[in-house]
Length: 349
Ligand code: KG4
Ligand code: ZN
Image 1: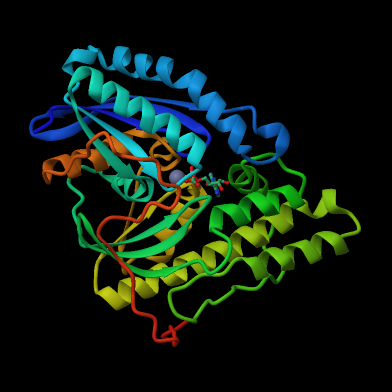
Image 2: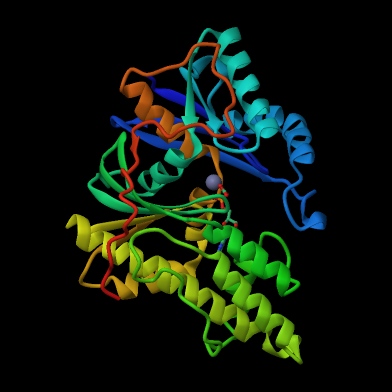
């Protein structure tokens, strides 16, 4: 059993390391260092080759800093948990090679973690007593997943996006509005001064548990093109777009609660950094379900969630040997996908 786990995350454009230590039987976060790569801002999106190079330079000092902030010498680390996928292959490789080298040289356990499972575990770092069953809505830059989490390690996929992820739609709409990258926080800020007056579509609102955001994105594009004074209308477009996304996300989460009979919804992933989403979901789900969400730095990409998911797998007796490889399409262990009948259940609006 591990008492000190070092987590490493390099799946995209954050270089992160964290230390989890056992305190009274529970894993407690002793340190978390996140270095967000600035180099991509100028390109308006992540440039994979630049991301891997930046990880290469940053990872060793980031790990050293996490250990020193935790007051833990490297020899006290029992196991290394590293993101093995999904993500950008070059970025993942840097973390996986580093984690393997560290585990091999120090003779420590190694566990490869699925980044998406890590996102769901993040909530337990703030709320250690939160236990399944619950519905999880995982909304990030690359994924939009609605999950039935019956128990840790067993996940049933209820729905997912058929095109763009929610975070990706935020980033693309932000770019249409000439805002910076990443777009989510910029849209949230701008939307505070805007009014939901554009009648944007709520795609697939009542059509099963799957999501679709590309039509909404196109609707925003048409409004941007038609605008005679974009500077004056930007805030209203941002507010209307954000309201449309939230309506869909919250309607599906509510339907999943009705479907499963559970009483908790966990919001996870980068889009769950949005205070507006958390407030809106908590309001609309009052009397229906409790909304559990971690603080923003644990919802954005970070190594604490990777260490926490790795901790779980180590406790289950799982670990990897040095054949562990980076896999940009790493399957999620324990994820059960529905057998599609071709028909989606209709949901009540
Ligand atoms: O989970 P994450 O950090 O990285 C991935 O695994 O993809 O998610 C990043 C995404 C970006 O698309 C970003 O625009 C979005 O999360 N995001 C937000 C907010 N903060 C980050 N979206 C909406 N509102 C926010 N406040
Ligand atoms: Zn992520």
